[in-house]
Amino acid sequence: MPTSTALRWEPDTLLGAGYEQAALGAATLVRPPQSPGSGPVAAMLHVHGYNDYFFQAHLARAAEAAGLAFFAVDLRRAGRSLRRADDGLPPHYATSLREPGADLGDAARAVRALAPGLPLVVHAHSTGGLTAALWAHDVRDDPGSAPDLLVLDSPFLDLTGSWLQRAARTPVLEVLGRRRPLAVVSTAPSMYATYQHVSSGGRWDFDTGLKRPAGLPVRAAWLRAVRRAQLRLARGLGVPCPVLVARAAESGPDSPANPRLDAQDTVLDVARIAALAPRVGARVTQLVVDGGVHDLTLSADGPRERYLAEMLGWVRAQLPAAGGQGATP
Image 1 (cartoon, rainbow, N blue to C red):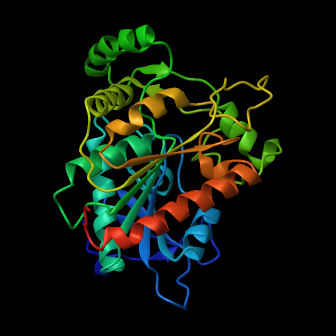
Image 2: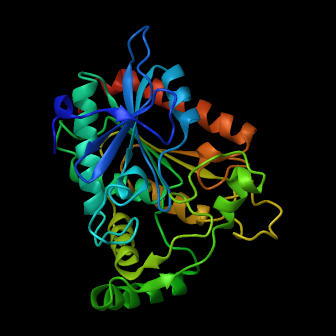
């Protein structure tokens, strides 16, 4: 991985307005305009989910207003990194979540070098949240990488469906993921993404080639990697730093007929997130957002503002205890 001093920052064409991006191995680091004024009290690194990339400039603004230096990473074969990938593999494809976890580790080390001495807050959404939880467990004894605080926004901690349905899928995925890793096991349009985009009357203008309302086919090896990570988490992780697990108050169908499409998590089962959150570590706090959607930062105005205020308030409250680089109180 190139050192932070070797990073070549270029204008970010996706967000513009002074944003910059830099190649970071297979991933891409993004930062907002460098603003003068009082120094930050911590650094935040945002990690996206599946069929996603970083475009939430309002999250960066809120973090900076709370005194955090903000960065985001587009993981391998996703977003800005997909445009540089030349391996011919599908978007977001991985055979183990340790692969995007390695990108997260590279980004964490780069951010620590760019913001020396500051506590590191990792804010991770959905599959990025699952990846970040296992990564934080694996690097818990590495002060150069380990986060001081971990925020999981609707993390993908379990499959949807009944216990029997979830259990039945596991051995099938093991076999299919090994024998036909690129086989498509699920494909469907994302009503969640469709409803959010400005072209459908939504409030967000994102690149539909990088976050696709048409959906992104799920490959067997990728879902096997996710399932293996979920089962590992279910056995219990040992993330030592304080962890905030945030979720919507309700789940609902990802259907245009759902009148609460903009007020529920229509991707994951929030009850499973609630049940599994304590297994991330010994210091887990849960935040429930009434009216929130799957990515809480993309919720309607009221729920979104509540999430940002309470999440950033929790971060600020933890900082005196975090005590700096790699601290594990």
